[in-house]
Structures are given as C-alpha cells and as structure tokens.
Length: 93
Picture 1 (cartoon, helix red, strand yellow):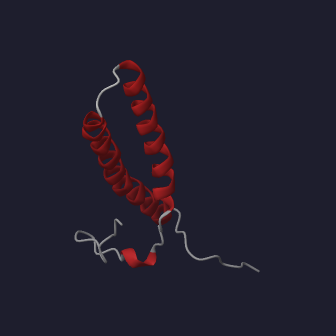
Picture 2: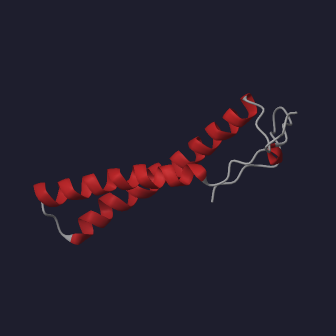
C-alpha cells in the first residue's frame, strides 16, 4: 500500500490530518483491469501467442500503471482535501 510521509519535507505540512484511505485503489483496479482485459483479448484474437508472451506483456501492463496511478491518485485526493479544508463530519447549528 502506498503511504504518505508524516510531514512534508518542504513546508512541514502535517499529512496525518488527512484521510485518503484506499478509495483510489478501487478506481484503479477497475480502470487498469479493463485496460488489461482489452489488451489480452486483442492479443488472443490477433496473434494467439504462447502463454509466456501474455505474462511478458500483461504483468508490466498491470503493475506499472497501478503503482504509478496509485501514487498520483492518492496525492490528488490529498490535495483536494487540503484545498477544500475537508475533515470529519461537522454539525453546524
């Protein structure tokens, strides 16, 4: 799981006050999964390669975008929470 540092090394912002959770992981699973399935189907119908070609092509195509995308998505969610001053639910009377 991708985790943030406790504090920003540049501006000393406390990252522990934000709760980005694993929400971006679900979206990445569906997005990257759909991409990989489409590539696998195209590869099977167009070329029909041996199994080792599937492994050689699909494993990096799965892990690369997932790891990179998880970092980007979590950072974007943290930036969005910071920009909107998001926090726990507050009741305003």
